[in-house]
Amino acid sequence: MSSELVTIVGFGSLLSKRSALLTTPSIQGYQYVRVKGYQRQFAHPAPIFFERGEYPGIAKPETKEIASLSTAPNPASSFVACAYQIPKAEWEPLAKREEEFEFIEATFEPLEEGAPSLGTNVGLMCTRSSDEKLQEAPIWERYEKCLKRAYGEVKVWSWTPDSGIRPCPVYCRHCVLATQREGVPDYVANSFLDETFLVDGKTTLRTYLAENPHVMLSEPPEEFRERYCG
Image (tube, rainbow, N blue to C red; front, side, top):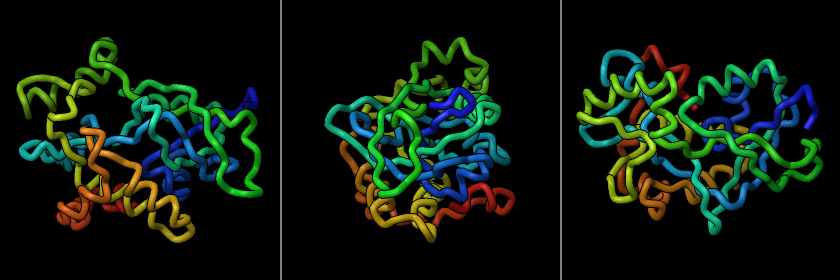
């Protein structure tokens, strides 16, 4: 990649170019790609879900509907993502915003004929970290405030496949709507439904939404409508 540009691989709300532009306004070469060897999962809580508005914010700790999106190594899995480049100046605040993750260099396959080259087809992607690493980071204090209040303990990346953690409804709806915006190809939306899994690594998002129709009815509070509207 150019020494002045950073290639980003996005797998959630960034699948909408509109959302990507709100996050990093100087994007170049935005396109859809396939990432292999990783599974997209709702498998960890995000502190911001508890902090948006009065506690518990948009999280639902009583039903464990607190999970955000991440990726985890899985040689049998793949999913459609987006890839684009941004100036280094926009990379640092993005990395700080996503500080609960590790960033890895993910190899991707371009899917759009005629899309601009992004160099080596390798970009930085958020993936799972560990509670041990987060304990040394500033974000751990934010997790202590919300998770100890909700559950009496702090677990971020140590929720097990049988833990029952579920997608945060408002956030999940936001991501689904992002993939269904005008101009987003159908294969992107279908990948999000069929190649996104709950923490068990088996239940697809499509199956979960069919069994839990309340998720797509979970509109954000008025003050966050612009942020969580897809």
